[in-house]
Image (cartoon, rainbow, N blue to C red):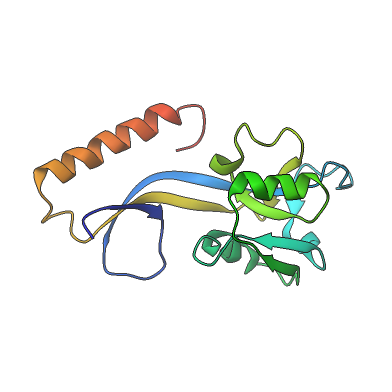
Length: 156
């Protein structure tokens, strides 16, 4: 591995360069009644049909769910985020997605911050920053600048 853009991995022997905290949101059918609450409490997923992205892409979602005793009816799917949002739009279940995955795609579903607040940490993993070529370090610097510029309206 030279360089990988990824969500922070729990294990591994690598240097980490933080780029952005990407908040997680509950994605709910348009007619879901959350009782007027501005957040979606994770325990409310208990017993609901809960779509989970294919293995490897669900790490952040499952990490958030570890903080609750909820037992959703997990339904693994191998589809992209837009197709998953379309399932939710048609009342077929619920899910959790990061802000960057739902931005400008969520007009026909309810989107609420989860509580407790959870996020995925996006960044760059590299075997050794100290021993990387200057071109890689320059690329990382430009990447940090671009994320800062593109996300200036949100918490980076």
